Image (cartoon, rainbow, N blue to C red; front, top):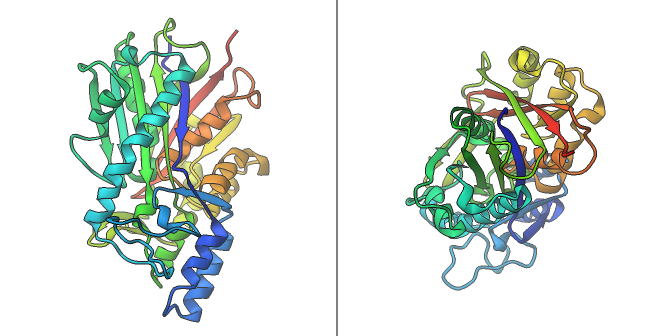
Length: 366
């Protein structure tokens, strides 16, 4: 039996941010020029995002730092710039719970017991600690201590597909394997005030979330149905190495997301997808931003409704880096929107520019 995604679970932090509130918070910062205010309004309003979630409670309209917390926003509403260490400390406190919550949701939906998991693949590019999230999942979920563990770090928005691909390879090599893939990204930890248009765009789109998938090739493990994993591809575009980058600075991680990224994707997407996505019926495309989806839609000559699932996740959660694509696939997996046998093409984009793609077929029980 071909390896399949049995189920997908998701989790988000409890703090929900309205896009208009975050926009107004940025424009109200002392010393912000009128030009920067116009840039902020343009970026936030064009993003087609209504709400996002964050582990930084201080970013909420009524938020304020608790005693002992790093200050992201003080009582006057002024945004501060915590050190990278302070931001990472919050990652260490907040990330494990989201890893565990999304993993529990996936296992419960898959009808797989924690003790049946044989391999764990964790993903993140927004924080670091050791023993890491792979170790914490063993402890927090009660997995067997001999579970094989792997972590994919700092791959960026494209990382969910390499993680699922690794799980598929494991399941294909070991027919009894049950692989738990978990991605958690806390992008809002790295938010900052800036008059740099690229930083403004980053602040306008990124949110926090976690998603997990259960992958196995064993027919007798978990509930029937899911997504059959039928093929993967990866490629580099001919340009874009400096247009999407993610580096570690003294005041958080620094994102470069130039205006050329959507244009490069639009120019090269047809050649980049390759034969693995021939004959696709439905699409799950990572929403790096609204303009990225627009360029993919135009470059592949898709029906305007083809990216509805991607646009919905962008609208309600923003860009959660690597976790986002799994949110989209979950929406396509649950419910009756896609019939049995529907072929789904998945696309994600990462630094480089790297284009990751996958071919999946939906299978309904019965």
